[in-house]
Length: 291
Image (tube, rainbow, N blue to C red; front, side, top):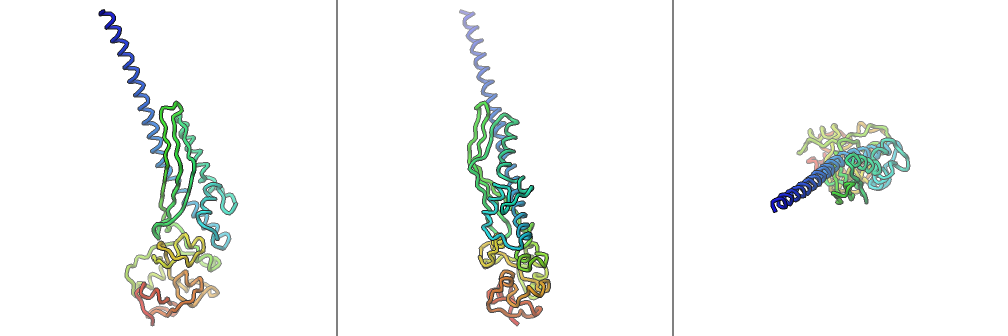
């Protein structure tokens, strides 16, 4: 009886230790894959930022090369870049490095190092603006990660968003509307909150931008939709002395109105150069009056 008890205790101990070791092994594996998923999500934000930045850069490059606006929806151009690595059907080496296929391949290769399978499926990418000064890129996909020994599995909807400041880019309106005869200004937010003739003059000469609901947004400017009007709209006041004579107008110097030749009641602003004219809708906005 004593021998039977001892043998039984020994068998139970072995079984308990084996079960404990197995659970510890599974727990360790789950932690490893969980860390992999977290690292992949963090890296995805970095990759999406690079993708968005290069996409906008090449959209602006396309405008410079063609001398005209994109002429199509920015999102359709972004999708071509992201899924094909091309812009208007033309391959670009740097765009080939930010495609969805490459993103998926890198994820799979990193997973293989830890004996796992991983991939994205049903991908969607979009660009939008929630404020006048940043472009938002959103990547949505199903993320699948599984241990090759079937110990653990993740299957989730992954939504990644990044913001890219428009201060990294130049205004395509100035380039297109002067046929590339002036260097387009960079989007710099005005430091002025209140305007008088002095601050308005500094605002114009500094080529600063200010938010306005009647103005086109950054994305509208890429498409050439100058009268889109947007809650994310921005505008500058054209420093006319920089504009070649053949591209000068005599209307309001609000950029999208000036370059489109929009006809609206306007007048010279008191205490300013003779070419400083604003339409009636902007007099109060800039705190000035006719003179």
